[in-house]
Amino acid sequence: MKRGRTTNEANSSSSEDTTEKESKRHKIVEKKSTVVQSPDWANLLQDIILQVFQYLPLLDRAHASQVDSSKESAEAACDILSQLVNCSLKTLGLISTARPSFMDLPKSHFISALTVVFVNSKSLSSLKIDDTPVDDPSLKVLVANNSDTLKLLKMSSCPHVSPAGILCVADQCHGLRELALNYHLLSDELLLALSSEKHVRLEHLRIDVVSENPGQTQFHTIQKSSWDAFIKHSPKVNLVMYFFLYEEEFDPFFRYEIPVTHLYFGRSVSKDVLGRVGMTCPRLVELVVCANGLRPLDEELICIAERCKYLSAVGLGECEVSCSAFVEFVKMCGGRLSQLSIMEEVLIPDQKYSLEQIHWEVSKHLGRVWFPDMMPTW
Image 1 (cartoon, rainbow, N blue to C red):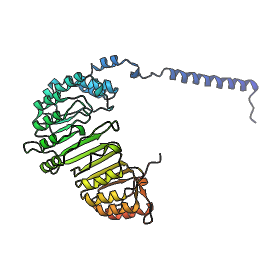
Image 2 (tube, helix red, strand yellow):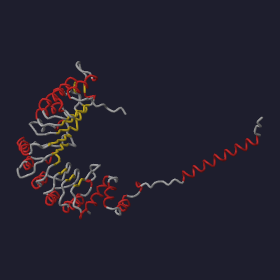
Image 3 (cartoon, rainbow, N blue to C red):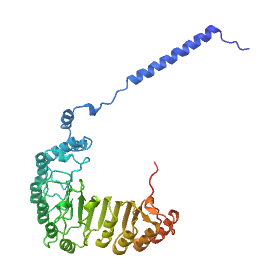
Image 4 (cartoon, rainbow, N blue to C red):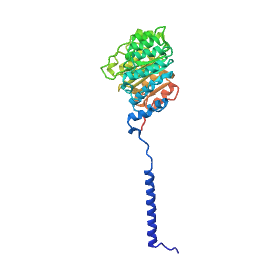
């Protein structure tokens, strides 16, 4: 027979358990209180951070500038450029994660830093300086020191550069193969210079047509004869055009044949403009339409399929196309459509095809399995 515990024993055991629990709890609290908190660099003054970074090697400073705020990062980049007096760079790309960062710097500070690179790098072949305060005199320094080696120049959204500055590059850099710039820098004179037998044969020309304020930007017209001369001189060139315009600003464009090969509409574009694309862009290889509205693009797509015999990549976002017209479009383009990205919401079922049926029909004409893209549900 087991003997039960007396009341005193029970009280004593309970007291011991409570004491042990309290002891464990205090130890846990003590451990938590002794955890060393990581220093928060965000609490330091910017002047102190920059002073600390001065003691880092040049490459480490370049890495550190990538995680700083936009303006401080741009300032750090300029300081690094100013010290590259003993470096002969072949590639330089100034990437601004926040667009205004380099533009917020004093122009003279940026230009002096960039000039150091242009003067000391005698074999610069690739230069990407989008969204910076680079200007015509600095481009002349670039040309004077790197005219024989420069092959790629990418400089969209550089408001201090004039068409004359770009013309200077085109006149002097005979090895230029790739050029990217804003439409306001494109001119008949530039295209004719690029078409001269003594100058470069471009392989890739990118033009950004951008409007920030609707109705306040006037877009000039490039003459058809200038495009014809350019394409005659460089028949295999990729002409890439990005349009970020409002509907009323498209009037100067697609009025006659242009040799564009890759066409991207980043804002809503009307049925009328897309209809003109089919009539004026026979060299078109890729077409991406971000949005159109709620008017079906059946006739426009059929026209593009009929006249754009090299079209191999298509992307449609917020648009509408009947299933029957889309199948006909794919049938006309056939297996050359290597890329076909269409949101499921774009396709409108009709009497001939439902959404469940269309992927089989499209797959048959493409020669591979195809499904429309679906909007993620998360």
